[in-house]
Image (tube, rainbow, N blue to C red; front, side, top):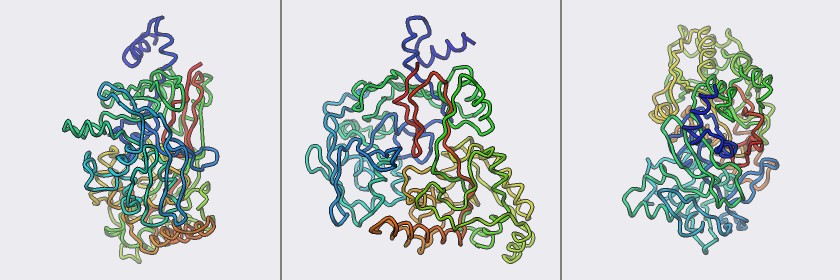
Length: 532
């Protein structure tokens, strides 16, 4: 075992003799469930990419305070909104340095040009970097940022103004999501002059606590400490993401000490982790949902009677016990009870196979039908075992004559299938990036999110859209809540997707690792960690 540990550390941490003990102490190995497909969160819709990049390489104008759930200063020290809600001015933190890497040496700290570049790339289709790496920005496309923000311009070296087309109550919290990262305009200019603009997303430069040192595809990512990090000294000199898709292998590495932290432990592994004297299990309330999304633009799922029949056939209790081992709760709607937009009066129907068969008969499907259910490979923050969940759905739907073929796909292939729009149904979900209900509702159910692929049901309802729009312009919280309740009722009546479960966010680590903080929203934050 000691030989294996030395070999691993020699590979990942470049040393395993007495002189390197301090290096080992200052290095953290994080067992991740998957590899990022880019090093720019603006392009991402997967938790693997967000975990590996958003809080390791970058910062945002604002962060979400994990205690109050309100926006707080980050790269912007303060901000103000105009009386009409159409202009937001941000004052930037002075002296924030960018990464110095093998491929870039900055000549200046962060300034307004960097913020303007980062957001103009997203909203301006004529921007020289807009179409680089495909020109798709899943989160910002789904919330319609390019239609909301009409202009981003510098008012001075350290001051930026955003001009909106209409008031929007979630604008500030959206800037604080994992996707709102600030890139280097100076680096972008050098790449453009060299004819290699695509490297901005492959060889990243940010202001975050670590910079990228090495990436061995589908194997590991090595980050080094950013010595000039504006938040202060980072205890870790190295951070290594060890890419281990199978949960059982991640746990094995955690048990042997080959990894210090394990992402997304399986529910069946909880008892092992809790009973092990050298391991700690961290849990936090998570605003997430697992859903069965039905393609409402494709027969027979375009018939609400079929969708409701499927909802009545399923047992969320089965899924909760067999997949989540009771760690979580049944979902009555898309929003979980911890959300301030949650409506306790909405309840999913109880399992009723007789009523489900009757609904299928009313839809002219007396003999049932055959369908394909796309299932994400591996675990997700909102669902630790998609395949097992799919098998439970398969069994229950089989009881009412619906034959389900399961197709397990890797994240990138799955996203491509959803954008091609040919799927019958997909097992998916959403982990909120901020506390605003709009974050989940817009990404899972809005018309704008269809082309992005996050609205896998391809459901577009004008009445629902009206409620979302009204909620974003409502003058006070109570009115916003009312609009979200009406929006949830529209979803419940039309059933474009079937809410399944909500779960806790979980992370396991060696007891020697201190300073970890499990975020209620967004990806993992590791820069505060240290070893005793």
